[in-house]
Length: 66
Image 1 (cartoon, rainbow, N blue to C red):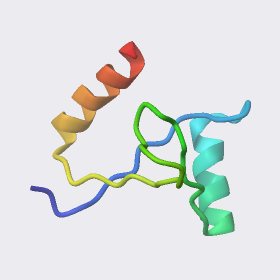
Image 2: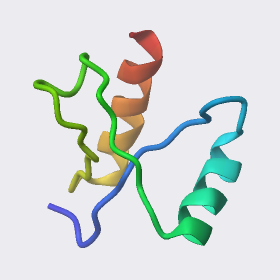
Image 3: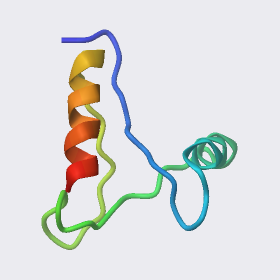
């Protein structure tokens, strides 16, 4: 267990990941995903996870392989 939750985000629509973070902070809004690899059903979802930092590194490796 961790004292923090994490939301993983990568670049989107030609924006770099840092630009996406700045957009999220300035708009104060997260847009849910409908990616069938992660979300089931027709509603969109935003995922937060409670994971130690070494677990995030493993997750990133898995996402890049997929």
